[in-house]
Image 1 (cartoon, helix red, strand yellow):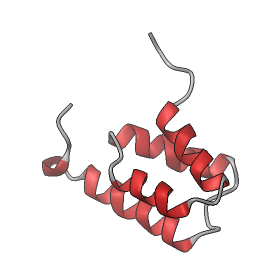
Image 2 (tube, helix red, strand yellow; image 1 turned 135 degrees about the vertical axis):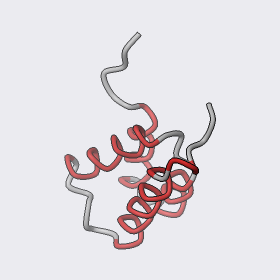
Image 3 (cartoon, helix red, strand yellow; image 1 turned 45 degrees about the vertical axis):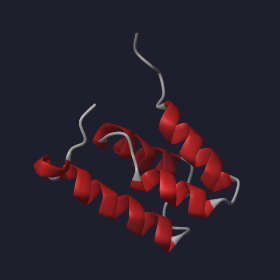
Length: 76
């Protein structure tokens, strides 16, 4: 069954909007997959939250780089 939206990214967006950046950053560092992280990045842009917090943007970019490397993919 296909999901219309990414539930993990919606939860992280909720943390960011609620002002709990340390919890959002912790969740981003343990992102379930590269696909989920890309969905979060797109959601940050759609909700106009990208660029507001430098730390959040850096963690998203760093985690994308780490998960993009083939040797660092997490097993299911």
